[in-house]
Length: 132
Image 1 (spheres, rainbow, N blue to C red):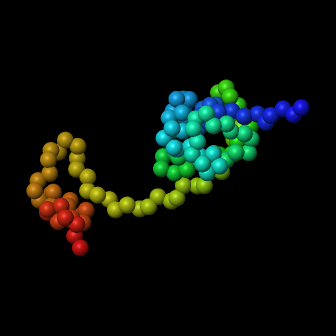
Image 2 (cartoon, rainbow, N blue to C red; image 1 turned 60 degrees about the vertical axis):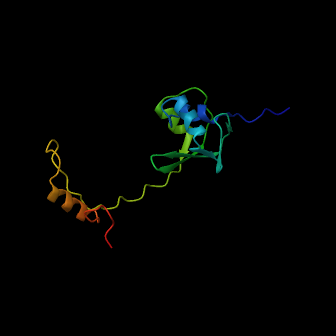
Image 3 (cartoon, rainbow, N blue to C red; image 1 turned 30 degrees about the vertical axis):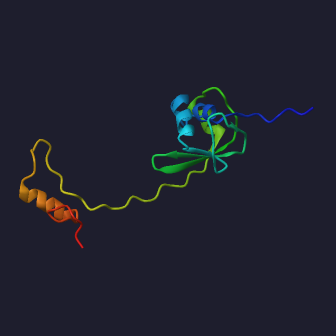
């Protein structure tokens, strides 16, 4: 008789390897559809096995990890690093954004002239319509 491959709940594993700070946030992320195993959105109770690829939507981009070891209890950071293989691509380079004029805090409301200048910089006319 063969023993089944070890598995753990996806929310429990993500919490145990410190991807999420609490198990309830991991469960909430699963419910919201931010966690995918093998490209499929999964429930918190979905079992994960060694070799599964997990994509976690985090901060506007995907974090990709591969399960290297199954753990159910929360472990220390050095041990957690051994339990997963991080295949997350590097974040895209930050785009240079034109600096918008900033008013000093507590300077009060802008004058009509200052408001018109700010709208012009944003590419809008005095009525708030986009300029061509």
